[in-house]
Amino acid sequence: MRALLLFLALIPLPALAEEILLSGPPIWESAPLIELVETQPAEGVTFTFRPWASPEKLRKMVMADAPLLAVAPSPTAAVFDANGIGLKVISATITEASISIVGRGDEVASLDELQGASLALPFKGYLPDLMMRRIAAPGPESWQPRYTGSLVTAMQLLLAGKVDTAMLTEPMATLALTQDPTLVRRADLCVLWREATTLADCPPAAAVIVNATLYDRPEIREAYRTAFAALAGDPGKAAGLLARHFPDMGQAKEGFVRIRALDLPMPERADALARFYGAILDVEPAAIGGKLPDPDFYGK
Image (cartoon, rainbow, N blue to C red; front, side, top):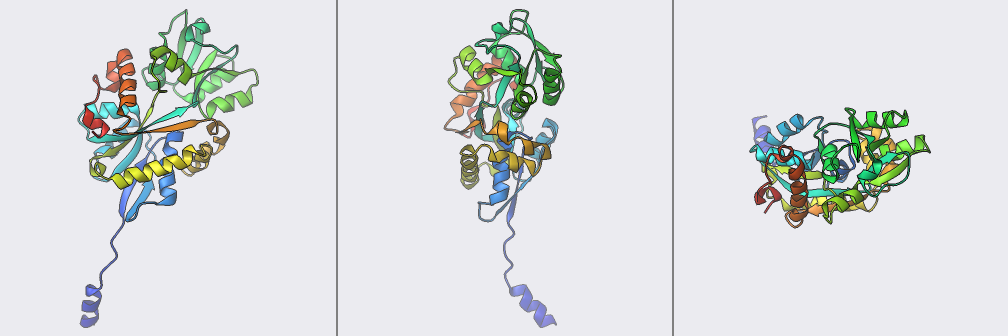
């Protein structure tokens, strides 16, 4: 028996695959991470996905020792960096046609054409609110905010006729239009943003971040970009992927089909993300940690 145990001890064991945690919220931008789980494209690496439910839970994941690749709201990533939490942005994501101003009436080219109409938003001081305020200050000549606590509530209030308009992301914008044929897309947020800021890019509202354990891993970046490209060519596929972890997203395909997704790799496209941060800094400095991030944040 001792000889057998000695023999077995001399047999080399297969190397354990490195586990990399992926995390994101229920939005289109998280789908490329789930595609990595489905395809497992990196040799010697096992990708697993776990949603984050709050910025605080995401912060704890970033600070943990486990390797992490995650989708975060762009301002949240900047706040983490400003507070000394080690991370880098490897990409930012633009999803054109994913956010609409939905309501009853004609299309508008600027927010002053809303003439003080009520506009439902989820939370005061969060990214949708900040983008709207950068486009045009609220007031009786433009728009009046109605904070609802959730995007779903915004859609419900609009359908019930209790607000004039609502900022809705896909797939909720398409769902609202399907349920009430009197509703229309009165404006595309990207169009309003470009007009108001003179920036060429739509808001890169999502940042793909890694913690310190994955700073210098070009193969992980390449795997992510390949997964992103596969979904950008077929944006409706994201609904099925997201439904594996967020069952309610199974109905999202019709809304996702119209999305035009653009990957902004870092540091090559750091300029686009930095300009977006500059626009938010003008509205609410605290939303990005009080200052623009340093070059290291963008992987430079």
